[in-house]
Image 1 (cartoon, helix red, strand yellow):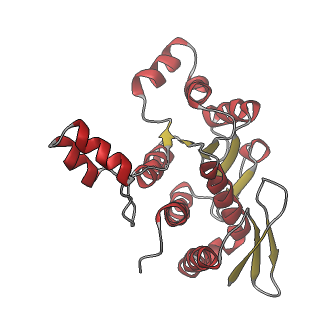
Image 2 (image 1 turned 120 degrees about the vertical axis):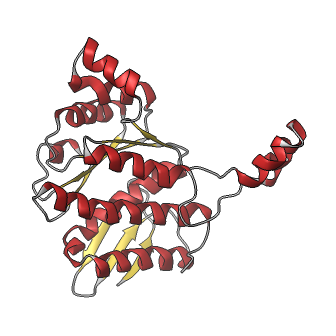
Amino acid sequence: MSIEYTREAEDMCTVAKEPQQGVCKLTLNGKNDVMNERLSHHVTVLMQRHPSLAAVEKDFVNAYLLMEQCYLNGKKLLVAGNGGSAADSEHVTGELMKRFRLKRPVDPAFAERLRETDPVRGAYLADSLEKSLTAIPLVAHEALATACINDVSGKNMFAQQLFGFGQEGDVFLAISTSGNSENILYAAVVARAMGIKVIGLTGAGGGKLVEKSDIIVRVPETETYMIQELHLPIYHSWCLMLEERFFGGRQD
């Protein structure tokens, strides 16, 4: 498979699949041939390792492009889910907030300021700090979440956090194997009202999250654990692609 970039006035990125040629034409603001190759590599590897995901290739790439545009605009990713999907939420943010495969050194000017601030600790930090792609797991704030559950309702636990942390232009990655998790749906409503794009990551049915998402990635499984087994390679690939877009070239 090859990936070709074109440019349009629209800020929102789209994908047009041409099955007869095996080509995904990605609409994105200005990409070079090297990035074309990198993205093509990861999409190809994902589809080779998990052939069943060919059914969601278009939505997978669209979701990536939406997250990339978010970071290009200086915004952030907010992630939430329940149970195993809560663990996935923290996993996603862990891969984005520090290195995944590539080194992400801080800028030389900031490294120098660190050394000037403290010759010992600053020198250590100048060598060890890593640049981040800002991501917030809404599942990680136990005191706030349990206060929402106790004082108001469990339906509000993610919606309240998203309302407090979110800004227009951010992206909400809503993970729900059924697509019907009420606290995820309530958060999606808040997101849409705030101008935050919603990416739904679900099982085959998609549930009610379909109508609340800007892009929905419905993996072709219906059993919860099987859905989750396919969610992991999807978000790993997203994280790999984002890291390479912002921090350097592919390392094989």
